[in-house]
Image (cartoon, rainbow, N blue to C red; front, side, top):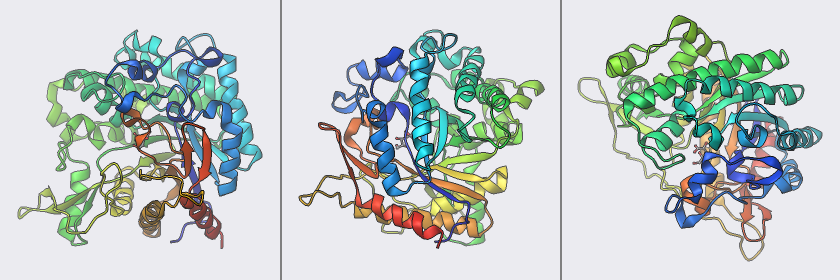
Length: 452
Ligand code: GCO
């Protein structure tokens, strides 16, 4: 596999999934803290109260990253740690944590990639209506500018939101993630408009406090479809289906790629979205659309598995039965590396934005073996397959910024609790002992070989 000289290899995490310290140093609660307190929400009653205790162990964790020779680390900041009231008074102690983390990373030659919102909305803002409140775009912009002002002299790569489509779907439509609501399509669409405005206003307020060379992106996760084979009819069907509303893979249309990416990257709703939702779709006026679609620097792609598509007799996309003897991860997600090649290509063709893989990885049933090591050979095979496909996209002309493996360490996997292990680093949750998995050592070699 080949990558360009400036391609960057890193690994990712998110605040609620690793930090713990949910009530420390002036942090207020987030919707994830309280969601986990509700009985029956999380497998085995797990929660992120302590998680990987990264809040206290970040120095040790950065040293482990250093041992892997990571070039970059993608993490998210916790909004209620920084602004306990959601807006207004800054909690300096909370903000200092990220200040120290950034310094620690830079001292060890690891480039920080910062996500502002990876799902831990301050509870106090949720109580004011959360993302349903039209003021939420201004709340987010204020938070973005607070973090940007403090860290913008050192952090060059920023992401506004992580997987807007996913948290709308899981948290507000299907009620399987915080805050656990089931809303109508009509209500979701109104919330999505506020979210898009939050992304836009956040981007402009952030831009105004960052240095000129800073990059801002949006980390997206949606249906990624790839063709059953390279025949022109199947390729055309797969390409079309990625941006169809509804999509051949059967996802609810509020989870469609275009609903989010077209306003952000193309400055408009696509015709199918307008058609499908009709009067339910809130109007976005020109001024608002300008805010939403101001230029950003990259499209972050979170990719784990996708859908295999073929053309039916009329050329319409339909899901193809898998003929391959696929592997399945511990989550039961099919191993489908081809989506990384085709997905990057299709997204680039439509949005013309460089692609950064902001997440990719797999969960497996890892444990520490008798020899004290973690032999996760399946993860090594998985990552190699996916990276090879991503590299192919680059060779075909898609501008690739880099690749962030999910995740730097095993962590709190939302409603699955600690049962799904995605890390390059194994965590023993009883003792908080960290062990580099075989995949981490393999990844180190991949990073090294890039420059050879
Ligand atoms: C998401 C998040 C991550 C997950 C990861 C594995 O996609 O849900 O961005 O926080 O942990 O994707 O499911």
